[in-house]
Image (cartoon, rainbow, N blue to C red; front, side):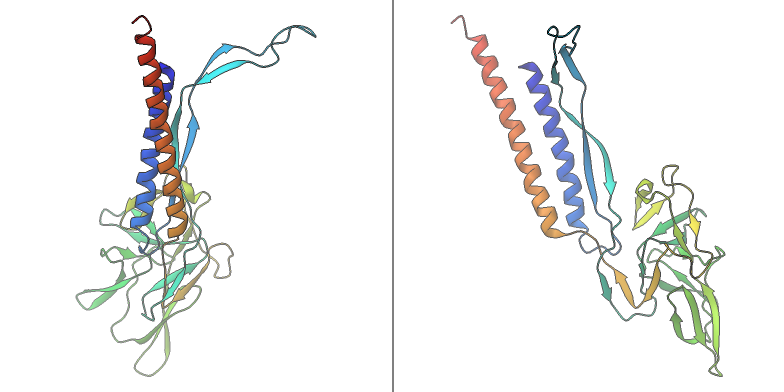
Length: 268
């Protein structure tokens, strides 16, 4: 019975974390480029009361006797399916239709990666640079800052990320090509907030798109934003399942406590 108490308690703790993750998904249902998470669980060690063992035909134990000690969360897996694309019409709202990530540089010079393409222009003297909402520089295919000349108009961004504009004579001028990065294991990326991810050993080194026709990186859509891939109905169902699982574990604790009470009062 004491084993039942600890096993059920581990189930309650696991479902608390599950609800926390689901709540975070629901909170970010309107976050641009957000990727939902799910909790994965593993069972704990088993106490082997009798091992399965067959010494010879007709003798031994064909099945064993084991009792588990509950459950524990093993990981939170991020699901990188593409969210719905919302048309905004803004020149520097970009979405990636594929598996790639935009590359940005943070103030400490480190690289970060994002699916949030709601970019802005930042004025620095007579130069204007393409940046994120936090002011982090968006990098091009050479991992340099993207400067948009002030004398160019009708800025256009093609599917391969090439930025062009028109000069005063009406000529098309190529400015830069936005970098698109890809990882062998995007699930290994570390979420650091502000819609940014960090590279880890689990994700592997990032690879930039070198050839404009190189497959697997995706195409850039100008005037669109990728919305969160959270499905509210799915998360609500998951929330109900987690709540019921939590309730069942509390019931198991209650039953084990009642059984212990009966054992304590057996001599009365």
